Length: 324
Image 1: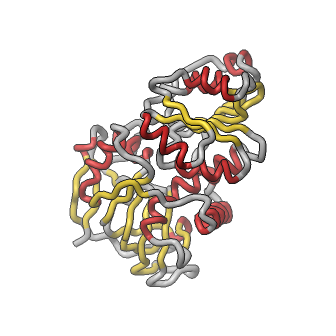
Image 2: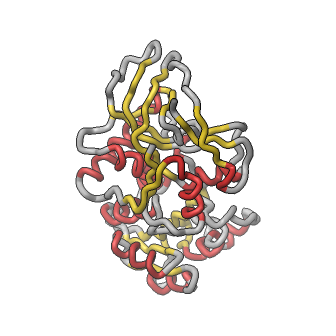
Image 3: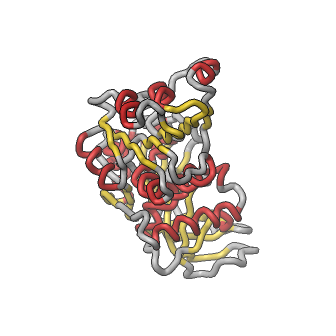
């Protein structure tokens, strides 16, 4: 019988349980998938810990690739045997078999393997909306990318460079600084040992950057505002170090009439046409070699708790894939 990871309460990684259970038959508009690869994302730790509370008991995981085993009534765009992937939606991807809405699935091209899809889809579509829609990056722009060697960062950096931007990256260790440079950063800073605000100001000749893409949160948020040029945009999309501190909106005015946004993939892919366009553009840059499926480590799905520990301790690089 298939197994999955479930939680009965929020907390540390040890709340995750490997349980047995047979999914129901797919209902209208649903399919049953047998997962072949599951993606690990930082948001999974937020769901587990309760930073983003879930209705309990609950599964975990927002991204996976697999093969369709059965179709529910009304599903016309897919067939049994199709290779597909998904990102976002209700948590529950940490499972060997899952029933899920067909409207959130994308078909995998023949030249994209299952592990690459599980490693890339959520993080890659996040990079897509950040670069192409939240702040449409163009040639000549200067972007500051925090966690530049991380899962999203390692996709953001080469894609931003491909678009013609100057990319300044930060990372939390000297090894990850080197990885950020290899990924395509023009400049990389260890934000734990260097004053990244001073370094950014020096690199830009005092001008500041056009946009900051910040997945770190508490440790970098206020400093990031000081890195922006007047009318620049702060894009806060993660909390790896904890929630960003509260502040008075007047601060944005005092620092140069700055813009601040907190986007989510769910809103940017809520319409199916946007979901498909995002996935198509991601597969295209993957095909062109602009971005790569940099899988730094794999774990057995039943060992997902250890994967969470390593992710939160910053012991992972690139993407992590869980194997059912």
